[in-house]
Image (tube, one colour):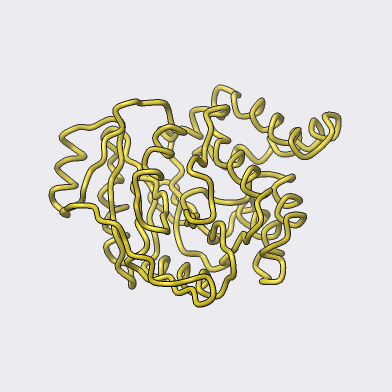
Amino acid sequence: MKRFKIRRLFNEKDRKYLPEQHTFLVCAYKESPYLEECIKSLLLQTKKSNIIISTSTPCNYIQKIAKKYNIEVLTNIEKKGIAGDWNFGYQQVSTPLVTLAHQDDVYRKNYLEKVLFQLNHSKKPLIVFTDYGEVRNLKKESNNMLLKLKRLLLFPLSIQIFWRSKFIRRRILSFGNSICCPSVTYVKDNLPQTIFTDEFESNLDWQAWEKLSKLKGEFIYCKELLMYHRIHKDSTTSKIIANNKRIEEDYNMFCKFWPRWIAKGINFVYTLSEHSNQLN
């Protein structure tokens, strides 16, 4: 399937984002047993858009699934880690809107429909993100303590008058990473070409939100549960938590918002929630 550039169908005074202006960029790594389930959830969207697979680990498994569903595969030959993979895919997509779909996750069929609705009621959107649930041992969860806490933190951004508030978004981020990375749709026209940096292994998304939170524009939170993030022992986040690398990264992120003595206290409390990324 050939890529093509989408003609801008709107102007600043009369913006109308359409499904064909959006791409699901599926970040695939090696032979994930959940990749096909992810792709099926994207194909079932009520609003049809573009789907592309991006990988730095090309293999017959990925090619076979891509061929089955007639999906183009982009290969990152530079292999610069997770940040490099995500930036590569993000930069290759030619549509104004892009969602970096993680290979293990699944999306509800009205995800894109709801995202487009929110975008078309905004003035200068930077990102739009949604509420989410988790998949653990093949079971979907939507109301554990960590998810409830994140919803509480994000509630102010569900109110449209706060979308443009840098103060509100930075105060939310100062208490932890409550934005689920695969739920985010990026508005490329209003964002820098490079979103992620390789300073962190697990907190590269939190670091990205911190950087983007300083920009003029809107952080849009859709409080409907529109996707599920899978928690499993082979995920990068679970492995980093297991070797305690995450604690150091969390502290460094809190220091971007607070004096070090306050950051230490918040980080101590924050680490108590990390067991939520572990399977019992």
